[in-house]
Length: 269
Image 1 (cartoon, rainbow, N blue to C red):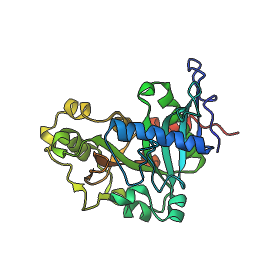
Image 2: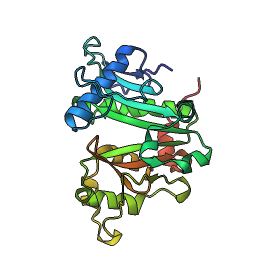
Image 3: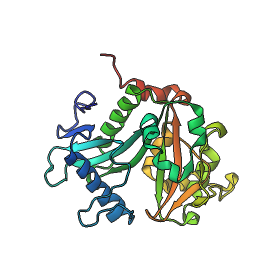
Image 4: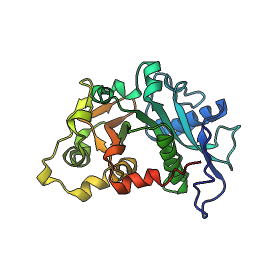
């Protein structure tokens, strides 16, 4: 499904950004190069299939997912520099054919599977440092909204990461998520035992909201503003040097304001 930023781009938006699902090997390699720069070089992660010689962060899911790519047309595709933002998208039907979701390694997804509802896993989300906080991120969210509507997705989920593997350093943020944004039991995945760490590290009445939110990654706060909820427990991912939390959004449970964010970006043809 080709996606163009032209229709959704504000009039003030520079014309050098486009957004599309990866359409070539070059797009995929450039997405993997961006992931390497962010997850390996910037955040200190690693993985069994990471190619340090070619500077590519890759894994076994790459051939079966859709890669939503933010393209900077000023940059060289030949140098694998043109992808400046990426979301990896794995629908429930794709995961069923492949055999699993990425999150299955960290969380028990039985509640989501038992719900019988159309789901979409979001993963490997990253943006080039030069493009963070700008209009490019807005374009990516618009395109994601289009994808959700086009495929009739009802539940979006994925893991989001805090840098580092010491939960004590993250206690205010993790505790805030647990006490204020825990998903209902019938949709709540739980971190698997091998990486499980409880998130209710500070009692609710001793939490400082400002302290909790200052320590929270911008992506997590963005999901919370859209009605995002978290699963039970954090997962300590030592290979990627992160503490992961499970995030999900139930589009049926969104407030009218949140749901309008999606519906206002789709017009019947």
